[in-house]
Length: 232
Image (cartoon, one colour):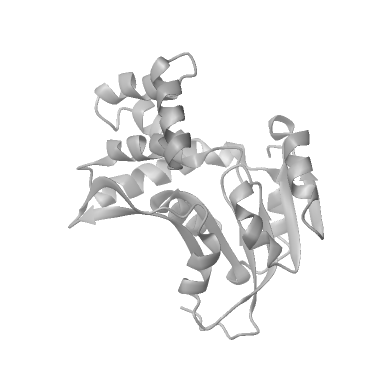
């Protein structure tokens, strides 16, 4: 790994709904179900917990809000229990090729192309196998993502470290020599602290509510995205 000095400036980019028109964790599990990579029962469970017409969805939403924990993500990650690390890696590669390549958001990719890939760090709460695949395809060496518990060569179906809301601390822990943030680009509200530390900051916004939230951050550039007509 490159030894970065205290003066090293880096570009930090979120993944979900920033680089790709996708919540990649949920879309990945949905893809694995649709392509029969996961057991048949998941085809029934997935819509029961994620459909807004399901009473289970609203019950889980209430509990999730009360305890401030992403229960939906915990449940769908449990679908990976017992599956080999190698299999999930291959599934993530297929997911990228079959789904994500068609969901690139052109405006944000154009911004990243202005920078050296070695200076870019993908920092996302998506699952590590997904982030690893994206980083590899984009020739980006450094990434941080939500990690999963492993038991030898298999996943246990549990989250080891959730990255959402802890990205700044994770970056500081990974690059202990120190870095400076040249640019942070994200749509994620929980990235506000991270973005506030950056020289340049670009907030990806999909509606007026997003614009109002981010406009309060000094020096931020608002990037309005209409995902449906911005894919390349």
